[in-house]
Length: 415
Length: 186
Image 1 (cartoon, rainbow over the protein chains, first blue to last red):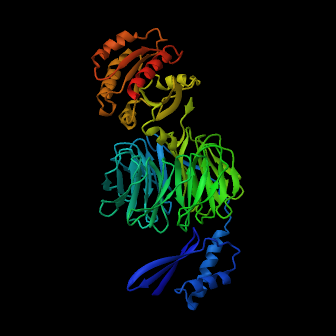
Image 2: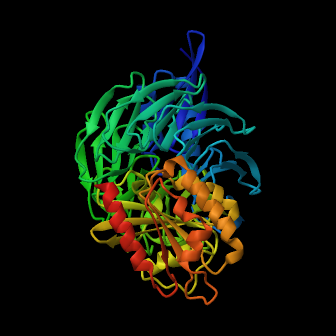
Image 3: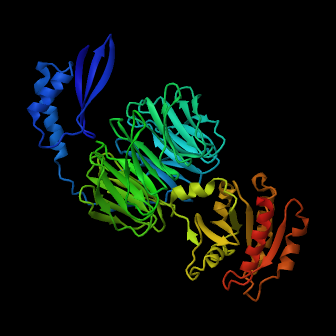
């Protein structure tokens, strides 16, 4: 094994090692999820050196330098004020979901008008219209971090795979017998997973366009799915009140997370794949040990259905959005509520952190999106202008641009 | 009556409804009065209604049923998308502007196409002859004849004159809906 070079990863903080093994180039990452601007560098470097044989004494100065760079990035003041940059009369019918590519250079919008559009973030110009679905385009995704492919899942029961660069359709995945409502690429971008109202999820081979495996076992609609960071596990959340953990290679169910007393709305892994957060119509969010499937905490406080949940990149915080019009932040370590985000006048359907973890973005039926300080819970900005409810919203990786997709048929870029 | 909000609740309304829930699709040409009708059902303010660019969904309780009413925009360019909403429809309500005689042919054609749709086959249809508050409104009997409604044999149907503005006739129509959904749901 021979170390070739280091790569820096800002969010979540980490150092990627590129090395050669048996004539093959490989990578592994050293996650520094607990790194803060005040972490003692010498102690940390010593820990890394002991744990990672690839980091030899001769490399120590280099590693120190990288850690300093990460600490500088972490201590940058985040006082970005967002202004409306453009209103995109994006579609002739309501939007469904929106998503950025990794660099944030382009983003996609799905719509009831059966298309998905690809947009240039800097100019707001439309790059491509992905046409071919015969019903609502509901679920959309880039194959991040690569960003050269787009997957679209439709109420027409098919999923299509497209070139992000040319807009050409590579494959149409057929097999579901009801609407496709969630999808994701695996981190290696070799598979697309689709979840359907037909109660199954399917994994599709990106190269061949063939179905790899069907995940069968839920007794009601699947409405959320997510891969873990390594890509060997996938979770599916269902209206049958349960979440299943599946082995990606074999398609076998590894665990069933049973405990919620209402339909699942969202299910997510944290970065280091140790925890799963699930939101439910039972007004709670539950945290589960990802390895043994045991519930480790029930996060309560919401007075109505929990509609969305997410982890920050480092996995230290969990944010929940509710039909009660509030959002909450919980500590993954203490399982306590650390902030209550109050201000929206109607249900919050979407919540996300910026990659830095310092800000939370919420999209609501009250036609506004709001920005919050994730530590104090203070509302920093109200993004006003949409004339109907906001269905989806997203940060770019840098945390400097926000997009919002609405029932009013427009998409707005804020920066 | 509740407004249905958020993508997730749309998914919940999408699945085939349990016994006591009824999915109603509200269609018709632009300016027929679909959204006014929806708001009248909800006892909401009807003074500031603009053309629907997408859809509105509301849930009403009526005679032991939960009626989930989907009001879909009727402008020509978005009519091809009506198909998006056909799945699991229990009752179709078709709204006609009874005073807009110039468009009777157009509305008749759209209705005929809907009745030909495989996904709507056998679905009970209620036709609201709306805007009866206008002096120039054609009576329901004339519309029924003009649209050859008597030739519909593959489903139960009814024409009901109404004014979404004043509310007159609306409840009679909804009573018919509940009566006829009963037959189908049980």
